[in-house]
Image 1 (cartoon, rainbow, N blue to C red):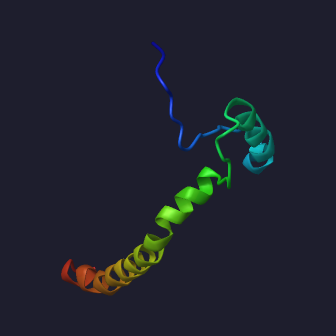
Image 2 (image 1 turned 120 degrees about the vertical axis):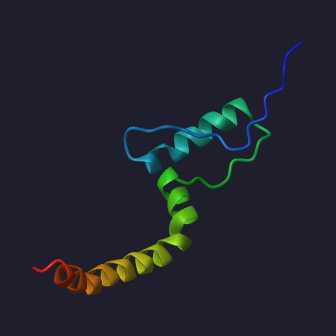
Length: 83
C-alpha cells in the first residue's frame, strides 16, 4: 500500500539567485504533477520580510526611546557617584 503524498508548498534551496530557479522548478513540478496548478513564487527573504515588516517600526521606535532614556538618565547616574 502506497501513501499519497500531498505537497502544498514546495521549498527549493538555491545557492545562486533564487529568482532564477523559478521557471525550471515550475517546469519540473509540471512534469511530476501535471494536474497541480503552479502559480506564484516567493523567496524566503520576501516571506520573512512580509511576516516581520509590521513589527519592525514599533521595535525601532521602542529602541529609540530606550536609548533616549539611557542618555537622559546617564548624567543623574554619574552625578550620584561623584564623577
